[in-house]
Length: 74
Image (cartoon, rainbow, N blue to C red; front, top):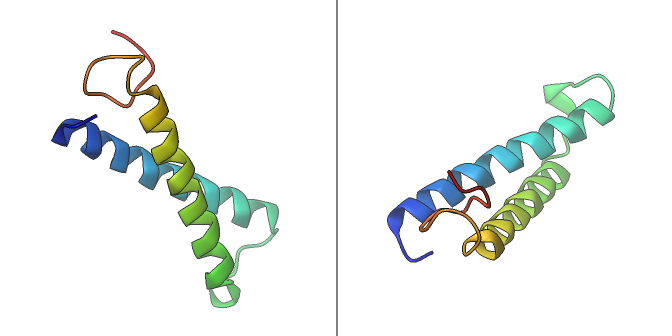
């Protein structure tokens, strides 16, 4: 958990989780219109997903490969 590799992989997962949350939000909202996006809601959803992803990486840091946020061992 105290390596650059761990934090790079954690950041990648957080960005992916944020994107997935936004896609889900916009898909459930119906037709996506970039001109009518609620930026406050979208930012909150993306930030919430990123926080949950980082917390998940921290919790699973001791389970999988050393210095990796993954719970899977190779």
